[in-house]
Image 1 (tube, rainbow, N blue to C red):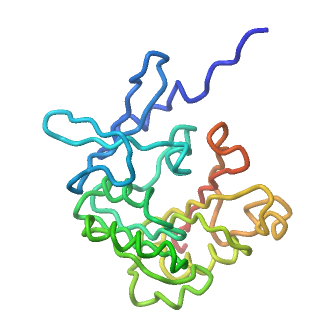
Image 2: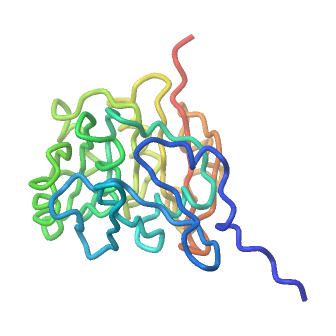
Length: 235
């Protein structure tokens, strides 16, 4: 039986051209790896590999520990992550993925990181001390009024929360914070309440957000996918 080619060995072209994100086919097997230019000192935040190139510290972005990295390697396509971007991150946990986004958008950008767990929040605060462009918020994504006034209009919202009613969370946060034309990226587990709400059709649960594409995160996360939606401009 012929072995199927590994899908993560061949990236779509847009990945290799993104400022702030280094893409390499570095190992002997030709597997693609992601790296972000570390803004903190020391650059390693959670024991990740660090390499230096022309005086720049590059942090390995591990797709087995970050669903967003997995989505990038699975060919999710363009996301509005660039230098100076403003991002609202729901479900920040200890800030592992947050730190790579903070590297990617640079010191001019802002990541507003919402985490509801008092146990995880001190680690997020420690990350923010090393990353001035990270703004930690102890709050529940189900109650965005808790951080209304703390978060400005943003170009992207990234949601990775282990809570029911994910569609309702997305709709309300998009209504309050997402700019017209902005992108909503939602990590979805197959057996979630969000699935039951929408009868497995993300378009219904996320309306008025318009679903553009969905990418599965296997083999890194076999039960997850990333749904990318857009808030269309009025008219």
